[in-house]
Image 1 (cartoon, helix red, strand yellow):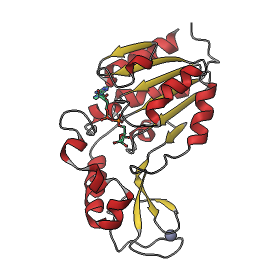
Image 2 (image 1 turned 120 degrees about the vertical axis):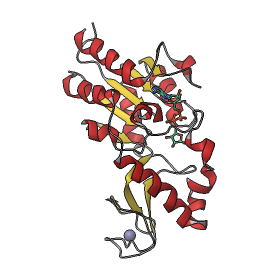
Image 3 (image 1 turned 180 degrees about the horizontal axis):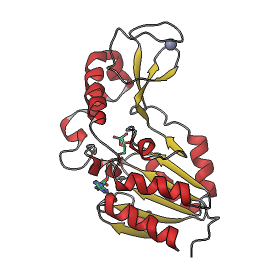
Image 4 (image 1 turned 90 degrees about the vertical axis):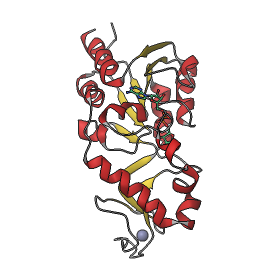
Length: 235
Ligand code: APR
Ligand code: ZN
């Protein structure tokens, strides 16, 4: 029986959105098998070829309009609503499917694709249309310097203090749909475990961090996550 007062921390990666039709990064045909991240997802790329970066993110932003949350996103939103203890959802994903499924206790550690940020004054605003050079920052007035509010390779993930606080207080840490290829997220299971949490991996296949988990369940998130949540809430 899972005592209601237990604190659960969930980390999601691209795999949770795969069944919604959002491409993952490192699977066969993943985004990084088609695009060079060094030319698209680094501050240097933005400085040297801003239009190409705009095109890459505009294409992915358009795609987001045609996809919806899947049962895995919905199950996590249900767990947050019905669970009696602490619940924190950390996502590496920059899509908005967790919010659209109803999740609120959500930390986007790699930023959000449907928000833009001024490269001059750092002001962040939600924005649905295409990124372009004509865009001017509402705060400082600078134009042509708006970027996706996304953490690029070589940049610091967001809200790390809040994340480490949640990991310290976690009784159960669950990773869903992540290959464990990118730090610091790939180190969270070990951190949580070192501070006494039990760890569970829900993933389609073994990941780089599978050995870090006390338990694993294999299968598509759309089936495995609702099953796990059902068991947890029924316990
Ligand atoms: N259900 C569950 N897991 C799945 C599914 C599915 N339907 N489909 C794929 N997976 C798993 C894969 O087995 C893999 O382990 O999801 C994982 C996806 O791994 P990646 O593509 O590497 O995505 P992620 O771990 O989120 O990448 C981390 O890397 O490029 C950066 O910033 C980017 O946030 C991203 C970070
Ligand atoms: Zn500005």
